[in-house]
Image 1 (spheres, rainbow, N blue to C red):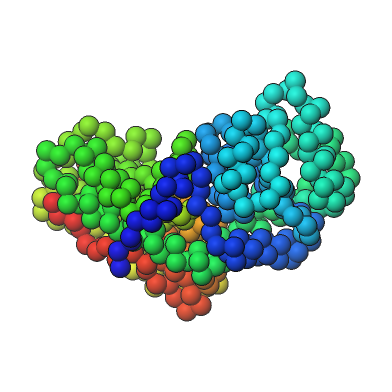
Image 2: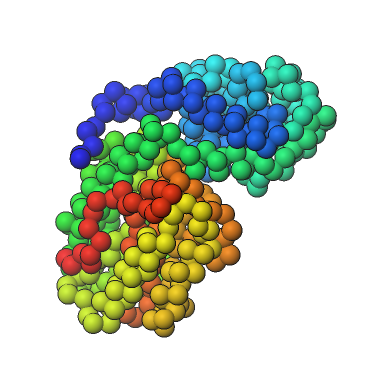
Amino acid sequence: MSVVLNFDAEIEKSRGRAPKPPVGEREGRLQRARDAMSRRGLDALLVYGSAEVNADPIRYLSGYVHVFPSASSLLLVPLEGKPILLVDQPWHLDEARKMSFVEDVRPYPNPGRTWLADELRTTIRDAFATAKLERGRIGILGGGTPLVYRDVLEAAVPDTTLAAEGAAVWADLVASPSEWDAENIRQTARVADAGLAAAVEVAGAGVPEYEVCLRSLEQMAGMGAEFLHGSGMSTHINIGSFSDVISNVRPFLFTGNVLEEGQMFWLDLSACYAGCYTDTDRTISVGEPTAEQRRLYDVTAEMYRVLLDGASAGVTGGDLWEEGNRVASDAGLADYLNHVYLGHTTGITTSSRPVVAHGETAELVAGSFLNLEPGIFVPGVGSACIENTVYVTETGAEPINGFGLDIQVV
């Protein structure tokens, strides 16, 4: 099934506003958040956000997208009563109100403006007073909240207690996407499939990396993919045409380096669509792969099969990693594995726990989406990676990407 461009949504984005989900979906998100808060004994959730920190929880619960990287926000969600959104760019306040589905949107001074410290404390005190939260346990999203806010909160609302369980509330939301979320995640996978197909179609000896990647981006843009200002968490594509790139993460997404006959390498693509995410990876060979290169791919493919067969609700990320790692170890390639991890929970955010990594204790949850991404990178030989987004069930996992897993020979 193809993705038809939603022109109404594109017009709204061109105006600088994120398209809003249906009213029932907005209410459902708030209720699921409050259910998770209640289970953890929280009286409120306080989310700090910027384009690079907690952007997804802010958008998911309020509809607000930060206007540029250094812009920040605070979202206060009380267990009872209406949420309050604070934004630190007063000039953007009217647009923020048009964009957000939170009714109460207020300006607040960025804590970096130390000369406005008194005003900041007053603004936060007033917001907590409106929400009737002069005391209670306030969940925050752990390390994502700058320390300066803790000092401000202590001064503004001294009878409240900050609790790290806010991170678990967000993890619960990621693990339990609604039907509306799930359909958008599947649409995102279709966008990613088309992006992969466009990249493979243009790849070949003598073609620069940028041409491969820009063709893919063009295809995805024409299907409604989102490209967010200053955020690494949006549609992008990486290519590793030199085999000394030892992971499918690197600082330069693509370059003017031209592909050469005999190279075998990974193509890593993250798609963002309607605020949802999927990651995909495929292996490209410029010309027929050598026997040694094909062995790298075959081991990677076996790792993917084992990971897919082993993924189901209740399995820990660490146990799943052990199964994949065993395949690489038996082949004598454990030292050449993907150096990030072998998978991560995804969907309404790009990456969340549980991850498929050594020692991970969090368990996979039925109804969640998981990325599996085994990869092997051997300098001087080549690299292979297979990454798919899968839907986790009680008894297994079902891939939602449709693009073929075989080596893409170009």
